Image (cartoon, rainbow, N blue to C red; front, side, top):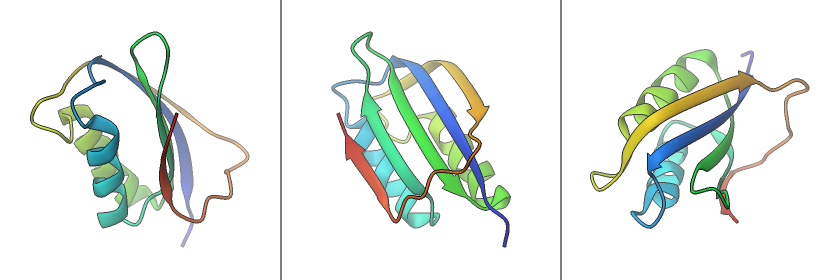
Length: 93
């Protein structure tokens, strides 16, 4: 099945609330591979690879904040080309 890759940046209450770890949990449930990391400006950056259907569910979960303590106030995404070769979803940085 074809896969797509997205680079996603979210702002809001996304650091110090378990956002990265819950994003990883959602990604694993949806068979998404990639990474999630904190940025020094308080935002969180995600690279995600998966089928279009799984990616739609994943991005919806990210927009809604995968953790009840978090709140996404700004969401930006772009397609990544070429598609990164991830073997699992990792919390980094």
